[in-house]
Image 1 (cartoon, rainbow, N blue to C red):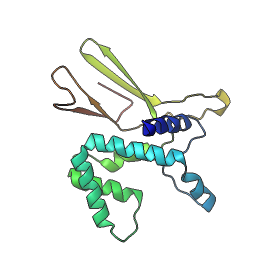
Image 2 (cartoon, one colour):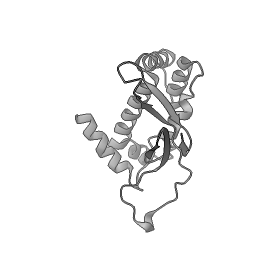
Image 3 (tube, helix red, strand yellow):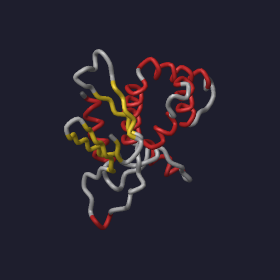
Length: 172
């Protein structure tokens, strides 16, 4: 419950135009210090939870073990974690490509789901909590790879999980 409250606070900050990506190139020590804030830590933690749920606990754990083994007593970059996850998914999912859409964009997507009879349509766009017109910057190019899980009348979370990766502005 405490973590959920922290996530909502981080999302509030992340929905502002003044937000920053979890990961970006820095030039100065001041920029490095700015990157280590609550937004980066809480958003980063929630993104890892999202990935764990999408990959499944066992696959995620295996990826973490590969990462720790490969970088034991050494240094690492963020891509190294995604490469380790790619290694355990055997090329079935490009984890690096998926996660870069989350860590290199500021903000998060608003996902709209509409149902017309048996057809489900999904759209994504960047979410803004409060935007002054003079402060708006175009983020039309923002596209997240959004792992979605769902249930149907034939399937529920205790028996099976259906997954869909929304990697376009809209899908069905």
